[in-house]
Amino acid sequence: MSPKLDSRKSGTSNRKQHQPINDISVQFNGLYARVARKARVDASFVSRVARGQRTSDKVERVLVRELEFLHAELGKLLKKGSRR
Image 1 (cartoon, helix red, strand yellow):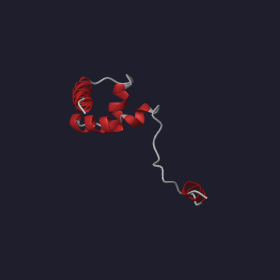
Image 2 (cartoon, rainbow, N blue to C red):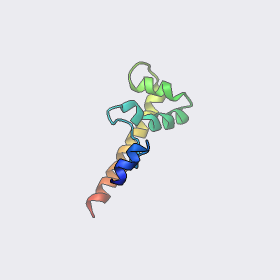
Image 3 (cartoon, one colour):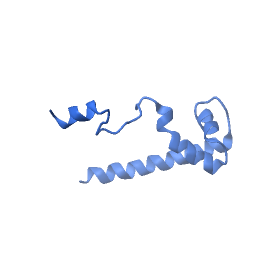
Image 4 (spheres, one colour):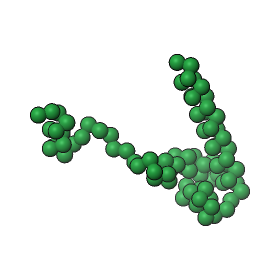
């Protein structure tokens, strides 16, 4: 019997549990928490602003700044990765 089958029988798995990629709100929790800290509001409020359910100029400014930062950082990583 393979180790994988044994681990399934015991109820454990060697695989990490991941959130579904299509649950976008889960993917942005870290971003919303950072924006909330910088804007001094609750992360759930940031989420509602991002979805268009609420408005806040301050939260929108911080959110755009964080998204621009992430975009720039991802661009650097992609350029660095293409040089290998």
